[in-house]
Image (tube, rainbow over all chains, first blue to last red; front, side, top):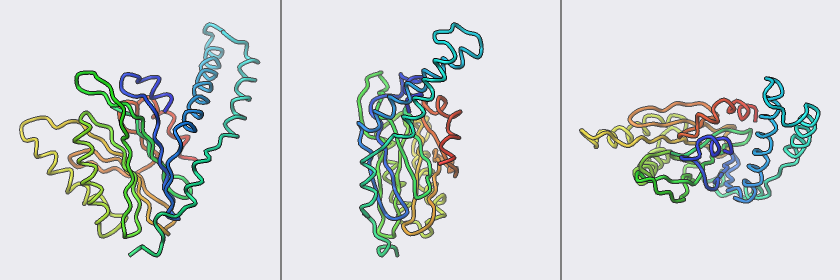
Length: 101
Length: 150
């Protein structure tokens, strides 16, 4: 979503609405603030990947390779810790199996 | 013209979309482009639209929702969707209809997996996941395979 908003900003933007449905009959809407946090992380990851590409192709080197590598590891760790507490809503069954005809 | 993404995960489906709406005169507003639909037949749907005409998209998405909720077989939804999109497209006669795309995720409660498909009037219904629609799709398409491993 971050990439689309960045590359096609004239057509894409605003908040991100995310809905999840489960085969257990759950329905959840992820809180906008939680998605915003995830998109902020994506923004940082995108910036690091661009720096890495510039290092590889020999473009202007804003950061040394080790700094890029360290920053990537730090962001990757944050990705591993990302959490969406609003997904708890999925545990509430809105459409029980018994209703299935 | 939106970015909306639909994908499956191990226990269901996810659909997300941005909220920016750009009018033909360039004015921008914010509105939800995703809605959920629950059927008494134990089916759950998420529909997101990417459209030049937001009102037309909402109307057609509503009609598609009714069609798929009533479909006889939960895994054969394409005929019902085409039966709704075709007449809508034809109703414009000599005028070019607005470009619309939908990503629809469907789950049958109690079954093992869901399905995701892309719909575009008059008769395109393409199954597969993950799917991105709208103008933002070209920015995310090269990265969509990441979602395929969820």
